[in-house]
Image (tube, rainbow over all chains, first blue to last red; front, side, top):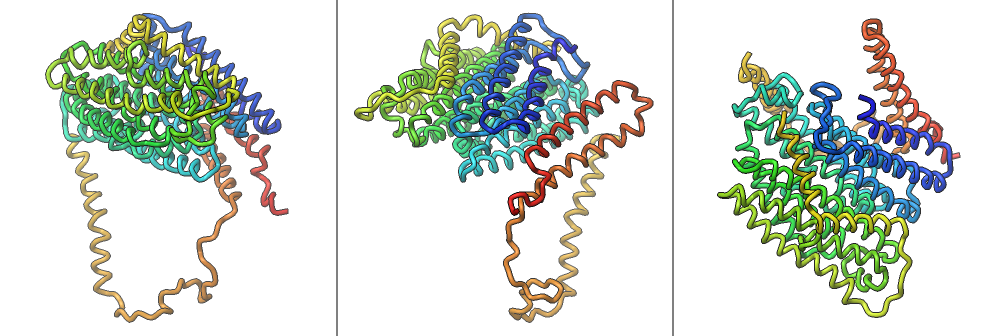
Length: 480
Length: 125
């Protein structure tokens, strides 16, 4: 059992070591050392997980509590890749803003919580793992010690506590019905009966996790938090933490509540329509780039929810779930990359308005070029990863037929709308702003950007293996 | 016991919870003193001393530090006590888990200590 948990042990060991380290060395030296230790721990864990991943891995580590399957390995890969990129980029940002080594400690604790959440098949364990991950991110969101940073932290904390309370209430109702917190036991106890209590539980769970994934109408905290938090932290929040809530939703609803699929898929369909449309329309008028990316993140969550809604159809369910998984992975890399690019631009540009980015194409060529790749991918242009995953969602909804096609059409319309505000940034970067001087680009951030851009391009041009991995990972969710 | 019966108790509890304040406020309104407003009546009453500052002052952040550290030891006791009562039957595994638990809490304490959270009013001297 310990061999399978080696990535987690490595991370928590490094995190505890960092706690001790903070007390015994000076602030700046400590931050630097902590950065390298956490980068090594994260890289090691990523290596271990990628060695593990492959078809047919499924081990029950503790019966009914923790299970390692292809689904959890997929999410582990997602979380660790993003953590690695964010830590790599943070090596520059932490030095620039003189944030302490505690920054990395929090990142490692969060990643540890997310890895445990990916394996949990028991509601209580899942809840504790999600809490472990979110509590550390409250501190991360408030790392900038100014007005906006405080606002970001307080909003995130209050909404986080509220949503956790809602989730817990939903869990308690399910426990009341089934007499157990194990997901499979709940599925057995519920069968296909849908009493008022079970429906109430579904509503509470969707509302609670709806806050965490920032679906409309639970999204209002996201732009303020994403804007006020340091850009590297925002990359992590939008890329990884949000995906943890999606993971929990998929595990709970597909494994524990398959009998109620008609009712919850309907709710997801409504949320998907609202989330896509409102997210994109509000993003159109944003002048601050971080707010624009935050609303785009809201809209992208709507695309994933389309795939969730399709799960109630009679069509190929692994295609829909696999499309959701792939879009989450691709979104994590491209949105994380976009926020890291904003962090990189911050070394030369004081403002965060889109107009401040004028001439960035000549000022910081690598940053601007990679940011353009991420934005085009977010818009869903062919030969970028975002196109592949969006196309897969569209395929799932069209093959389901009926009213699901309408969801797919709405997705396409929304993608077209979104192209406007993504392309606006690229136009400002390359075709505006007169004479500018070349600025030095932060090395580590650029390294993280280039790696993310390569992943986005690779998945976009050679999508077969990524699609295969996502589908086989999703399939493990449907086999008991 | 079926689900609806189990929630009957909850329903009665909610009903009592809603009715209790409503009835109390209504009865109190029947018994209250006649309304004769006067500025002196609106002052904050505190042991017959007249208020001389605003009540909204900023407290020293170190109070919060102490509260946090208190929670650390508090939770430690909450878990240690049941373990101490049953450790004979739980065997070596439970003991190992408790040692790990105390170890993690101790790390937190060392961190707080080194950062000076245990020194009272450090900035004031």
